[in-house]
Length: 249
Image (cartoon, rainbow, N blue to C red; front, side, top):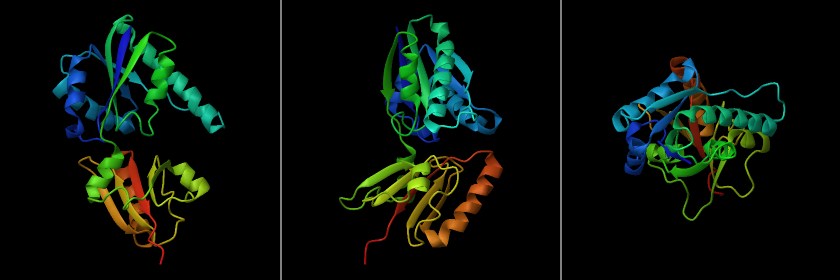
């Protein structure tokens, strides 16, 4: 049986790696390394930097991440097909272990939060004998709130975490007080009331982090411009936004 450790590595700062993560990584027999093309080469470079410090002696199995099939119209069907394709690639990448040993995969943030790694690992487990373990990591949510020194919740208040498409398609969820918006390809919050408080970060926790905060009406144009400039400079943008409605008068 193969032991597969899914190791949360934080949001891009190598110092986010926990002591547990460093230990488990150094114990691995093989590390799977996803590569997502030239535009996102920096993501692989950060993983390699971590490996050089904590697992220099461990063999690496690079693999190319499949892309979603744009010909599949239905969102869930398209994502499920994509996950199946990734599971097949993982299975092939694990072949050097010949069915036994310890493999590790470095996961951005934490494997439990808006990340498909656990679902893909479950698919792999139907293809070969696999024991899955999760090593938790610092999420971009934590990196965002730490960056602004802002609590995630108000006093006793609820927090709703959702993907940008849900906010864009459904608006502000009923009963929500604080929102955290992830997986945003743009500014899904732009139609909210202008007095909505915004905390926005691109590359949260990384050296090139960009932070903007303030009422939506005052900062929306700045955020749009910052996203555009960041994509032009780095070839990709990974951002996260916390939103809070002002107290009722």
